[in-house]
Amino acid sequence: MKDNRIELADVVRRFQDEYVTQFGHLMMPSQKKALADIAACRTAQMGGHQYQCRDCGQSFWVNHGCRNRACPACHGRQIRDWLAARQAELLPCDYYHIVATVPEETRHLFLSDQKFMYTLFMKTVAGAVIDLTSDRRYLGAAPGILMVLHTWTGQMGYHPHVHLLVTGGGVSDDGQSWCEPPGAFLLPVKALSRLIAARFRDALQKARPDAFARLPRKTWKQPWCTFCKHYGRGRQAVVDYLTRYAFRIALTNARIVDMDDTHVTFKYKQRETGECRTCRLTGVEFLRQFLMHVLPKGFHKLRYYGLWHPSKRDLQQRARLLLALLGYLRLADLVLIADLAGEADRTPQDPGAAASEECSPACPHCGSRRVAHLQERRRGPGP
Image (tube, rainbow, N blue to C red; front, side, top):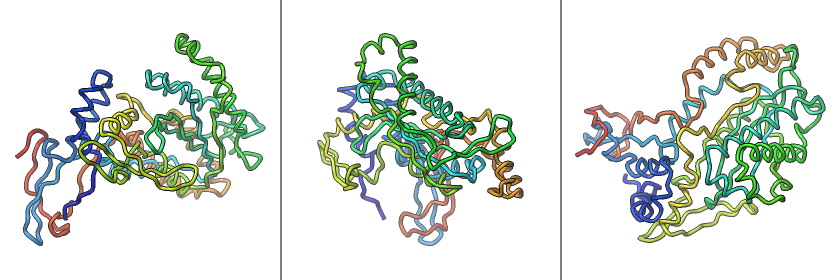
């Protein structure tokens, strides 16, 4: 029952020495750690547990995952736990999807000073959305915003952009009513794009004048917001969004189709046509492009703003009460939500920060899950 698929860990083990020889002096600590963790993922080095199958009698080891947020093999259980805890934040309202991106001319600045530039961009976009929605022409209230940073294209090119899930409503300033957009759209894309560009320009010029001076004037005249569209309504809209955007990483194991002594081939979907294509890169170039998307240590790619900010718990409860009074939420559900909120307080806000554990392993020899635990092996060199 051995799985012969090629995984990212296989690529790392084969090409990391060559990559470090060429580019090790340029690597961030988080990139070095990602390579080391992924190479050791689910090996004896990580430690694990030994089991014996009650059906076929064979014993086997289940090694721990590396738990690195850049590893495509370590996101199963923590994503499920994180999703369950997020149920407390869901509101039975309309949701909108906004995408904001940075012009090509700025990408070298983002890559050279990632933590600062990513944070500045995310705060700028959130502030622009909140200020526009506070205008009575659009909403007249602060919505809830869940924002996630992506930095890649399908071919693993460097393309920083953010996806926003925005509630189609918010609590009025006096706290007495739930406000909704007067029309079919939430915000005008062109106005939002201009506001993001202007605010980011001013903030960058103030905080990093040298970096600002290296950018051409046309940088601030290009689209910074690509679209704002209605995404759906209610709980399922949020779950669909989280599954599609919040948990993505630059590359999944399923996309790697071939590897030889010098090259790696992976598949991607062409955005314009939806056609599936393949890209073949040298092993070193493959790792270089992958590591561009490993975020700096301590950086949170998923953030909450507006009504969903952690400091707005009282306002969130007010929103649920108002929606219940409007018939969008049953009053009995408020008790359940309060219990879920307690669970959410104990769950990391970023799913990448959660732990991954092995649970109910299947016997690799016969597939049975009737297994008995024999012993644990601590992290370190194993037998």
